[in-house]
Image (tube, rainbow, N blue to C red; front, side, top):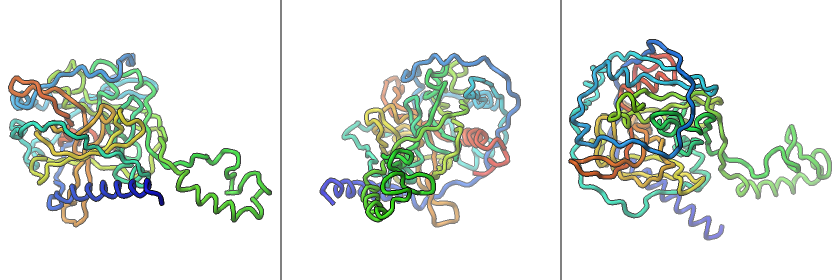
Amino acid sequence: MGPGPLILSVLMLGVAVGMAKCEDDDDEYTWPRNAMPVLRDKQTVVLARPTFTAEAGRDPRSMCGIECQSRIPEPSMVDLEELLSYETVNESGARTLTEVSLQGLAGVRANHGYNASTPAPRRKRQVYGTDSRFVIADKQFTTNYPFSTTVKVSTGCSGILLSPRHVLTAAHCIHDGRDYLKGAQRLRVGMLKLRSRRGAGRRGGRGRGGKRKGGDGEDGGGERPRGKKRRGRRSAEAMQPSFRWTRVKQMRIPKGWFGNVSQELAVDYDYALLDLKRPQKQKFMDLGIIPSVKNLPARRIHFSGFDDDRPEQLVYRFCTVSDESSDLLYQYCDARPGSAGSGVYVRLKEPGKKKWKRKIIAVFSGHKWVDVKGEQRDYNVAVRITPAKYAQVCHWIHGDSSLCREL
């Protein structure tokens, strides 16, 4: 082994050990397990087909700051049900709006200790310093859990696999608040898979039944042992991660994202669910709820994405949460626009068990200018999974609210 592969192996081992060490700080804490609110569809109406004219990369939203959010009254149940109503767009362009009802939220908020009117105390602003991102270049890491749950959205964002058929991403990756993006009309999701550079169907490869085409006969004759040796020597070099793309057959966005509903609260609903045409075989990551990240010992979050300054590379990072509100996490994780839509996760123990589990607690929205006591400050912002949002996304995935009653 030459010095290059050795250095890479040591680097990746350091990332893995560091990642485990960061997460070990939270081992004494467990995932909350409580009854969840139930979201049900009331009625669905057909809307005009979207025009798909919005431009990708444009973020028209300014956002209400941390102190500002603490002054916004908690939405009534009628308002919340309007914000959680959702649009569905099929690959054919058919669009519908579904109104919903939400039941059992008050008890859940009490059990989880939510207090939407009290923001976390501010910490001194952390200055962006040395780039703390890790490029996950080794194929053994890139194509294995948890990194394998990260996907690339064809409009230039990232996302995370929630089930074999569903990807969670940011709403602004497919809709700018007024219309769907041009690229959302034929939306695709890419997942990193190990593939041979030669390909099975090319000349000199294998035919049906594993027999080698051409050479000294239909089955390779006396050259088989030497061929096996060559193939074994090439396998480590030839198998490289590359994107396997899958079409999206359906998109869902909460009505709270649309600017004509609530401009102040729009960022709180910057999430969307994509329904894939083909189920995926790799492991996915579950949703989770944390009433307060500030109560975790390190206040640390993790996420991976395909940052646009590092094309075709998976980038992992972790950082400390600086502030939080009932719907948003404020932090200074180093990130670029392509990482928007990434699933933000933490690692806690399962209740009553010794095993630990990673769960998605937020969706990374991106860089925002936030008003703090009349001063504009920049943060990276993630949209939290609240009990109401959990009920909505779970309903989108299963279509049966009885499967979403308990976290």
